[in-house]
Length: 302
Ligand SMILES: [Zn+2]
View (cartoon, rainbow, N blue to C red):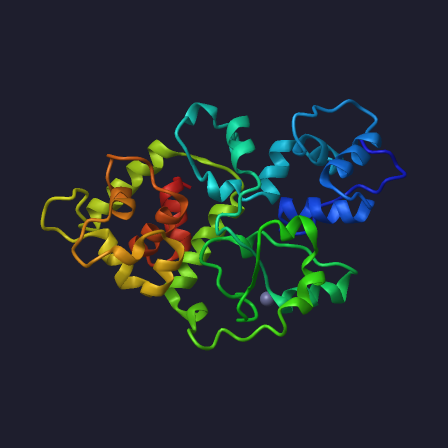
């Protein structure tokens, strides 16, 4: 519970947790996040678990830690698959404390991004702008609404500044006209798949998702082994998406040659090896399906 003298620090739509904490820090006048946490705790009338910043900020928003992470962290994307299906609740996220500690602050693209035009639209409605989760997904090169290249900053910019304070530091954003990447249909499909993964707000059991991927791979005629002569899913990924895009979202993708088995992609339709990374899964689904909704519903069994 929060004292009535301190307004409840509500989340804005699609606001990301790191940016939310930075905004609260500036709002309370706290010079550091630790000072922010002291201020919030001082206004909490019931004892809270002080295990982490999350255990102070989430209750201050009137939310459980689980709901807070589900709605404003990147964990639903970063931990889309979990191996221990027994820890999954019914339609609820269930990230272990170890996973939360390791990943809740991590931006999957390694940079903090925003769209200048989106920020200006936010400022027309209220005195501040917020960092949005969707802009932080891998492959979000330009704003889907304004076709402007997203501006990029170091991750800690989210804690330090609102995007509105950074507007002037990069000059005017330029339309993404050189590459037209934002209008390539397969890139839109990839971006829509990653957005669905994020907005689902939960994890899925790796075992059942992988079984469905194997079945889809067989139906589509892709081979799941390094040896053999059948077509490779990795070749289909590079055929359907611009190489520059795959290179940007997948480490070491530039080494791939046509006909060469690429474990990170080709093992997504195999039962062997580790489960796919979120980006590898989204790339595979982009090549395996013609539309994002069918892809998402198929692998999650919805
Ligand atoms: Zn925009």
